[in-house]
Length: 629
Image (tube, rainbow, N blue to C red; front, top):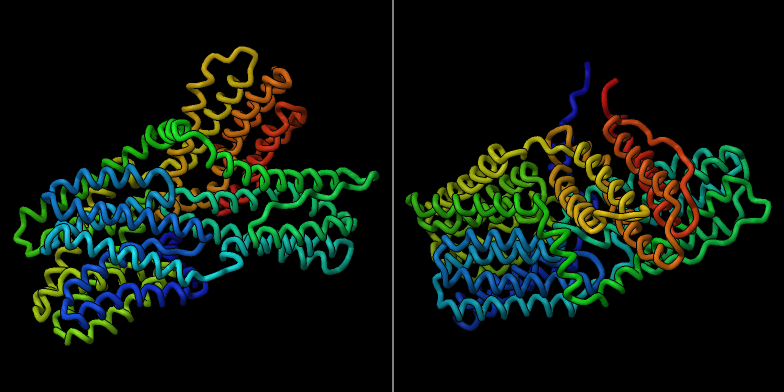
């Protein structure tokens, strides 16, 4: 009998991310959310404590693992926009939520931190429309709660040597070193299998993280590139192992040192020079290690230069790469439409608290450019389960003091659900919001049915109008969009580095816009229940190398002014190599091998073209392997 396996999208939605439980974050969430309620009850002002707890919830949403500066930036941005949204919501009619939703989606296009902040803007603006307390008092309490949660996180910040994904990438470098150390011995084949397993784990970890990240995250981008840059290194290392030739001990030591530096986030050292009598495989290995080290140094330099760039220049680039993207505006329109329909439904139907419908839409159709289908189903189920839990809790009308340990227990589970599975996260978020907003309705069993109806209506609006009826939502053209972007990049390369550029500026803007749209399309498709979901997982690493190739072409234009123009034949060779990569994607084949120029100003462009081809030879073939013969 043939085993029946669940579809990939269902396994992806229901699976739990096997990461350590963030106990310190969980403890902070319990104290941050239950503490204000306890203080308020002790002082005889429980309603004030609840308002402060709402502000703490906003920051708890944004707390996550990562570097100190990154986490602080996320929490402060979430607190500021959450407070602004809350203030707006307490002063305007719910119809204004349509404009807030559009602004939220537009802000979310700028990156991971902006997406988290944009979500808080919409969610807490919606919460504010249902607030009955004095607007300025409620907003002041919100700000106090957000500040309390931020200070609590800063005072008890957990110290971790490496994130799960960073550890997975470091293990690839360690296993690569172990394989080279075992070259010429019986252990080489076992080490090769370990390296293959480490590569699979690293790609799985990064792709899974990418599917749940809100917007672009440069830390994960760097990890992706550090992983994909190992392709030529691994090819050379395998050639050495197959020939039974030992690698120099300095190379093995360098790879172990690189793994350590990846864990502690420091730049890689300069690779050791190959011996004078080194063969082709060893020289290719050295060239690959140089490319990895060069990326790590240039990546750190890029971050520093980004911080030093004038605000006007960064704003113009944001306008070109984000604001003008067609997919960005499509998502803005979709979120605004669904929130608008939710507001109309809330006003037209005899609902006791109409703001719960747009609130459900805001939570389900989170403005982070994720998969509409996958996340809508997951959040919808989690939200419905949370509604049953929270509404039943209030309907039982427990003593006021008992709410403190109950809120603490649910808040303790919040960060666990956040890192393990977003359906679990929604299940724990919803009862907290219900307790905070519906405390005045305690003792009414009708609350259970009312909140379930609001949730079902909001989820239905998202699934019908935001997914089933939305143009192109069920048929993302992942492979063809990637190939088209590669062709556009080849046109930019040929024109910008050619002897007589005519459309350099237009093509550069078009290339960056195409990459921005491509990134969004891929992120939406990662957990779609269709063929496109597997395609997106297979081709996602190519986007990282394409971004760097585009940057390299721009840099080569400036370098040509110093060292002289590139030879037209070399430019044509590089452009043809990129077009061949596009054809390889369309035809599901390997790229054609060809020699690329190695002299300035095209040396870095050639390295990035090799990186694109290397990725297509690696994870990109997963799609064709998965297809039936």
